[in-house]
Structure formats: structure tokens, C-alpha cells
Length: 126
Image 1 (tube, rainbow, N blue to C red):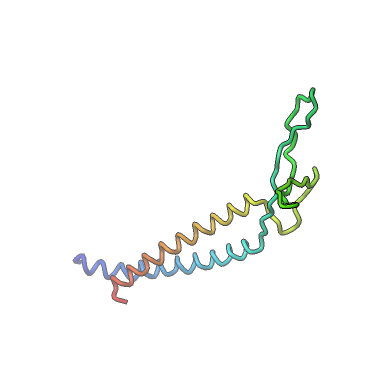
Image 2: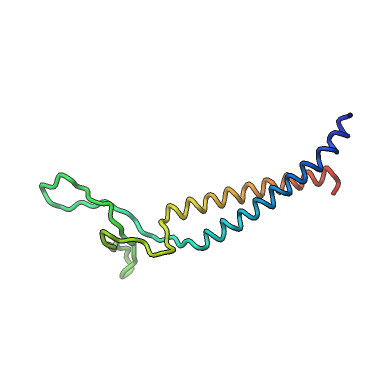
């Protein structure tokens, strides 16, 4: 079997596999996009603080949740309380960024697959 014949017998199989992978990735991205839309990043910062006592040997204390708010044109830290828990649906900013980075990696993979698909289609003359 010459090289050209082998190429044309394998290309359709590769094309089908690539199309299946693109379809699978698009479905996965839709699920990830839906999950991301359900998350609301909350700008809460977990800070350690010094108590200011001269003889304290356990400083800094915390971490404690603080919200960064703008008051009178200046940014201030608002203490949320020691036992504060995020409301349902809210997530820490770090978790949101991690999920968003994962979604972006899926987008890059999809672009790469579609480029490979376009090249295979050109080779087959489709």
C-alpha cells in the first residue's frame, strides 16, 4: 500500500475522531460556563492583624475576613466578623480565578482542535 493510499484511509478516521473530540469539548465547555455563571466572586480578603498589645507573643492574629469598600472617596477595610461565612452562591476570588483559568484552557484546546480539523478537511478536500 503506497503512502497516499494509507493517508486517505487514515484521514477519515482521524477526522471523525477529531469531530467527536470537538463535540465532547464543546459540551464540557457549556457545563463549565454554566457552573462559572452560578459562581459570584466575592472581594473578601483574609488578613492577619496585630493586636497592638505590648506583651502579646501570638501576633499577628487571624486571618480574619475583611471587605474592601470605598467610603468618602477612600478605600477602607471593613471587618466582617470572626465567624463570617460567605452567602450561598458566593465563592472566594481565588477559587473563581482557578475555575476561570481552567475554562480558558478549554477554550485554547478547542481553538487548537478546530485548527487541526480545518487542516484535515483541507487535506481531504472537504
